[in-house]
Length: 50
Image (tube, rainbow, N blue to C red; front, side):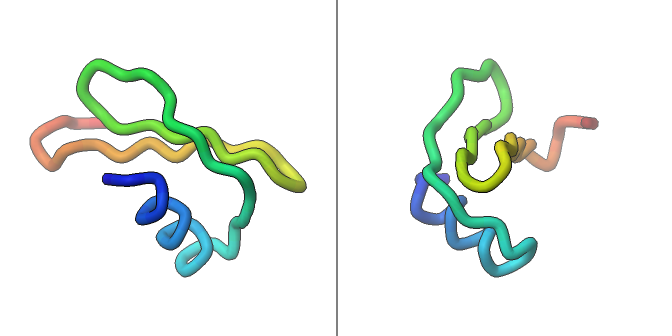
């Protein structure tokens, strides 16, 4: 997933906006969102149990 897709997902589903940057990870996809508050978006592949 690209940063633009993650940003759109956050705004559409949770109303969260801010600057987005990728975070390192082994198996999942992580983004840091900096804005009025800070968030981390974690996206797991279907085969991983969170």
